[in-house]
Length: 159
Image 1: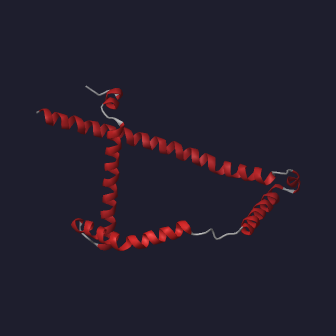
Image 2: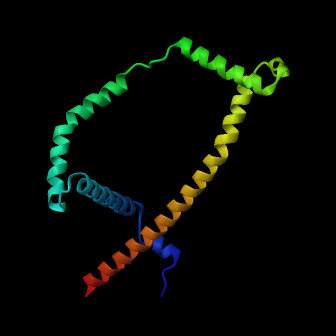
């Protein structure tokens, strides 16, 4: 008898899904780490953990120091740089629009918003729709796999 979607949902709660997903993510990261270490250093799977430890111990202080410097670094452009950039953008927009565009006071702002919206919004919508569809397919697949594994384990416990 096929399990209905309601049965599948009731059989698998959010906490179990989170734990299963985090284990899956850690497994994928571990496999990627192993493949990278094998390609870069030619180490076997048994040596990969030791090499990871050595790399972390020797590289961690430098990483923390660099990250701290990046976070505390001041911006390297001044107010004058920002003003020049704004003027260049405004002049470019006025040049594209023609002579009468300067009669509209917030013209540059309106053109900037229109260009950014026209270019970015359709791409963002498509990307968000694709990500939702992929997430839904993967979640459904994982739920089926985990429910099947749970049923198999329960059958094994009762025998």
